[in-house]
Image 1: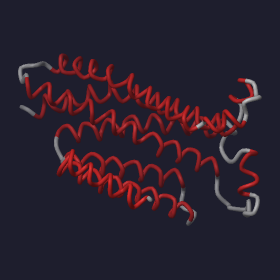
Image 2 (image 1 turned 135 degrees about the vertical axis):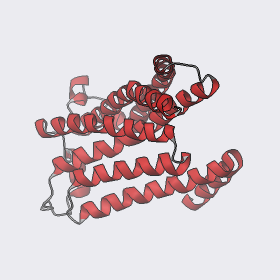
Image 3 (image 1 turned 90 degrees about the vertical axis):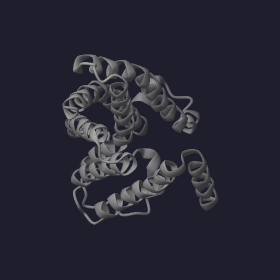
Image 4 (image 1 turned 120 degrees about the horizontal axis):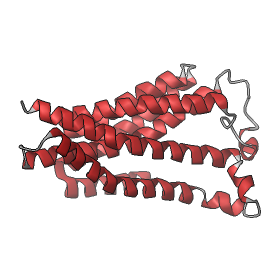
Length: 247
């Protein structure tokens, strides 16, 4: 079934996106391979945080430069992502070190009970690394959308000032933000329909304090924060790069 769906995906991307669609197909599976290597190397005992940072950088390079080429808009987008990623890392590091929501919940005891708990691995590092990797997709998508739009605005009006270009980027970001937030929100809710049915008798306070639910909510909230921060940063950096690159 996976092979059939992959074939359908490839055909649709080739028909609709043509050369860009074919590149998208292969970069998708290259990113998937990157995540697999992330998990494999982590199983060897390498630090999960360092691996997550490397994975985020490589994922950004693959998604930006392989699909869109090496140009001013992809350079601006890449730098913007790295800036926001540093902030998210500090935020997640603080949450991970100051809370106890990492690890498995009671619901996981039955499925992991047959395995050894002596894994000699810091689950807090896994928690931090997981949240970094989970946030990178949203950052890439939002950043390149704004950077490309700012570049298009400049191409149609090369007399525009950097301040006006930044304002255009922010206006574009306002439209992107609402759809991004809705996408993340519905992804969270749909992923927890079974959870809500299983714990339908519990109170709101019980659900909010449940480890699995708290982990997912925090993950989405961090993605929300990253999606908001990436807008002004990308608008500023892309407008600066595009204006100065034209001189």
